[in-house]
Length: 288
Image 1: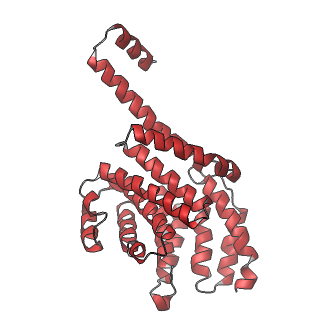
Image 2: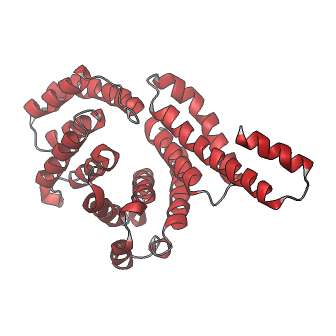
Image 3: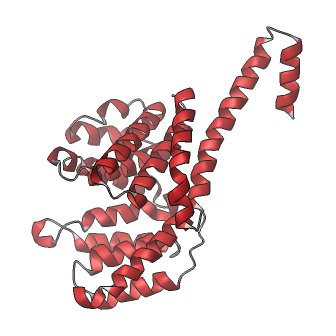
């Protein structure tokens, strides 16, 4: 209502700069909120096929919004998250995954640079320059740093045939560890989930750290009160299979299948987690 009144005044009194600025500010704020609303609508959807079919339109929409607001950190964050999630959940073509994760990564970098100019210049620098710069990242910078870390991880996964991409993993791990130190409850403990995955990428003989991974997974379950079902699925897939613990593996997957999928911000991923749990449980006897 206030926006309408201000518009009427602006139309009647041409050149009233203060009111024009109010309109621009309100419009930009509404646009930024739209990006967040799109992300929330998708993450809370419980029908996978609806998202699979409709998400590309949202990706194009967020691109357009960013083009009109290229310095909007909220929009850039939404774009990074939407592109990254879509590529991870629905894209199987390697070349396409590379393109989409590249866009996710680019948006995430730009969002982080809008929030922290100290960290921005070292994002593409060697690890020895990147790690010390994290000391200046405060709790207020966690959202864009987390978005960057996850987007970077998605990009690395899509470019796993490139050793230069693999070499970026220590940056992601260190960033996630810094987030945990600042606020381990962020996103229901999701940083612990990704640290658990990173710790169990390789067997112990090749440098893997399954005991650390187990601790991360357990903490992620605790912090999410067991409502982020992706944690139990990854725990089973990454740790239980790595150490050949079928009892733990099957228990985690059965608990996942018995759980409620509704969890604000994680519903879609919970549905996808149940689909993966079904496949993993069906292959349990053959694997073990």
